Image (tube, rainbow, N blue to C red):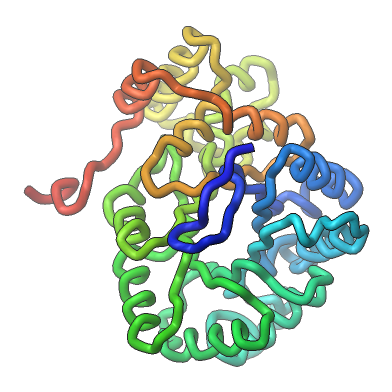
Length: 331
């Protein structure tokens, strides 16, 4: 496994992040534990989750699965850089109650204690804001975070799904208050969705945030979906945000060109999608959310995959980026 520092911190993390969103909804507890053991054996030390994972009536279930895995001992917790998130409403559907979501100081305090209990640990290494909160002052958020750091409940704070200007505002406020600020941004970023290159990633680089792309295969679209369609497996492979994408003839032509290119070079689409992200400036590591051990093994192989200049240039032709801001939309 290869490692890098998370943004401007001294924290060393693997260049592949284990995403756990499927643990519970798609993968049972025993298989989830086996995948985490295999990830640790492969040197993956960066695990990402969220308090709402498990979804529906099972919100929090994914954190519980991690907690029972940590409880097995064997230095599991000591070896893992643990990241979770706060924002979503943890109440049962139809039973929402004020102050049980978003980023008020009250909810942050409540949410971190609940996550620690489910995770069966005394601290969270990276506590991430799952979404911007338009109602809560940034000063209030940092006050709550600084208290948690002083209490030893969290070590670092990160953002997810923040705009570039919001990263700037949040870290400028932290600087004014004497807080350390955000150290990471978890954003939607992959070959098929490159808008983060305009402002989010430059802002992250300017403020020393590590970039952690989620949905690196765009919901399966970049994982060999047309080939799987021919083999009868497309229903599951496009179960995410790319479910209807192939109905668009332009998108389908792009994906066909992508798969043809990689077949010509003897490369696996899913591995190339991850490996491409590892070539991008500012990227700490993509989040791979395996449902099976085989998917984990494929993601681990991507870390050592070296893409030639020829392949990288061809990928840019198939999936051109937007270009920097403001040139992407002005002169």
